Image (cartoon, rainbow, N blue to C red; front, side, top):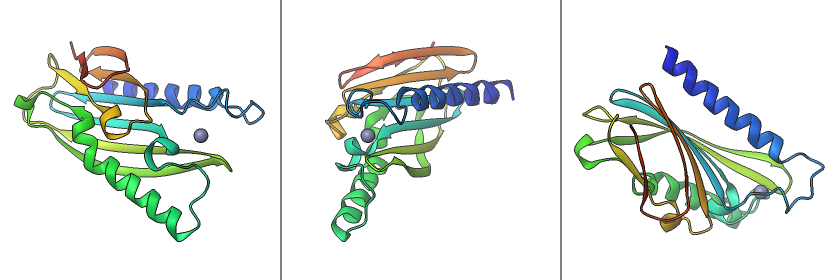
Length: 173
Ligand SMILES: [Zn+2]
């Protein structure tokens, strides 16, 4: 229970800070961190959750509301790619046999010209995740993502990293 609460607290903190970083009155391009994706993950033994926040532009190429047939198709294609590639983007140790499953995919149309993709995944592994490392390859799947801010809680260990290259990893210990 405690871990679940902690995880929610991190997710909540991440939401608050992203809300604060883009006030309505701010110059649009300045505070618009389009190269940034944030990933929060929480694990309890062999099970966990991943929550991903990333601007829609990086996933499907635009951020206005998808109204035309063409835009709807591009949006769908981008989101499908995210679901398909997530296990290549976030790679757990092979010996863990982790399965990543999509739970929630949402697009928050925050204002006319900005939208954010919020994706939640559940992770089920066959061995405890603590003590292993996890590799990130976000840029390979979505080259418009430049930096991935990762916050992880694994059992009682809390780790953070700023991932800027394919193949960088975070030790979960
Ligand atoms: Zn935007």
